[in-house]
Length: 309
Image 1: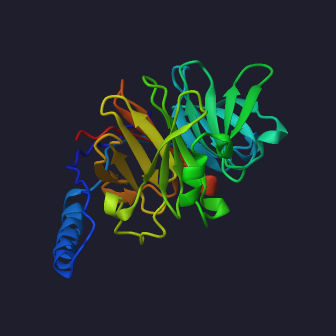
Image 2: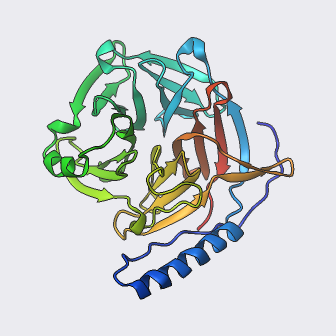
Image 3: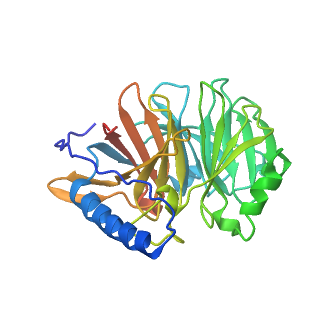
C-alpha cells in the first residue's frame, strides 16, 4: 500500500427532526435545521484515507461496479457490475480475483451484494425486483426470489406505487447473528425492508424519509438516494451510502436514530470527495471502511479508517 499522511478529523452528525405541526414549530425547526447545516459544515471535514485503487476492468465485465460486501475469503470482497451478469471477488488491493458467470436468467442489472455465513451470496436484480441466492460453486447454483413472492409484499407495494423502475432495490446487507436481511429501495421513496432469514417474509417496512433524519445539504429530498448497505455488528446499525449526497447515514433500526458522515477526505493537502459511491463494506476486526465507486474508467476502491463515534 502507498503511504498517505493521516489526518484525523472530528465528525459531525445529523439528527432526526420531529414532524412539524404548527407555524411556530416550523419556524423553530427551520432555525434548528440551519444551525445543523452550519454545524455539520464546520465539524464534518471527512474521513481518514488509508489508500485507494483503480478497479475498472472492462475485459472482465467489471466496468460499472455496484455493490460491495466482505467475503468469507480473507483479503477479498464480493462485488457485482451492471455490465455483465457476474459475481466478482475483488481483492482489498483493488485487484480482481475469480469471477463467477451467472446464468443468463439472472439478467445484467445487478446492484447490491451481501455474503452469508453459509457461504452463499445474495445479489439484487433491480429491474426484476428480485434477490438472487448464489452459491459460488462449480457449477454455479442460483435461486431467484422475486420480492413480490414474499409474505408482506402487499404492504410494501402501497409504498412503492409510482416507484420508477430505475429506483428499485439497490442495497442489501445481512445481520449474521440474527440472519435478518435488509433491502434498501434507492428512492422515490427511499425505503428499508427487513426480511426474515429464510427470505420468505417482509417483517418490517421503514421509510427513510427526511423527517426520520435523512437530510442532505447537497441535493433536495426527491434526489437523495441510497446506493449501498453494510451491517455493523459492533453498533447494531446499518451504514447506508448515498451516491447523490456523497455521505454515509448510520442508521440504528431499533432506536431509529440517524447519524451522518460526509464522504470527504484530505489527500496531499487537498480536500477531496468520494464521487459516485455505489458500494460499502465494513471490516470491523481491522477497523477498515471500504467504499466502491462507479465512475467509468476512474472507478476506485477507497480504504478508510472506520470513524469513531
